[in-house]
Length: 128
Image 1: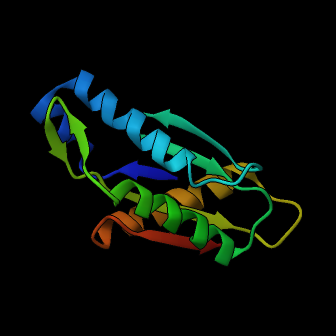
Image 2 (image 1 turned 45 degrees about the vertical axis):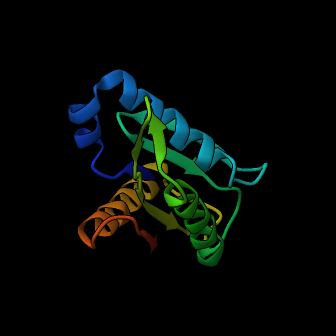
């Protein structure tokens, strides 16, 4: 799971249309870092979800760090004004072939909140 850090501040400062441009740029940057077997989409507000092809904890961290660094690499320019944009990420991995999707999503959401509570612009993985 991915959450754009302090997105409400962006919308409050420059408006929702400009905020949408930030979301589009985050989508472009994250999408450029993913593997062809990964799925990626917006799940609401400023939150996104990546579904990784079968991956272990190290691979999940690698994918998340590439996405995080791509988002923070350079400011997003909106109407001549540069905005620093960072994201927080949380993932869950399981070693079993059978898993419960709701448990994986809850675990990823918990890891995301650990990243946010740990200072934002971070990645956290929870193994279940």
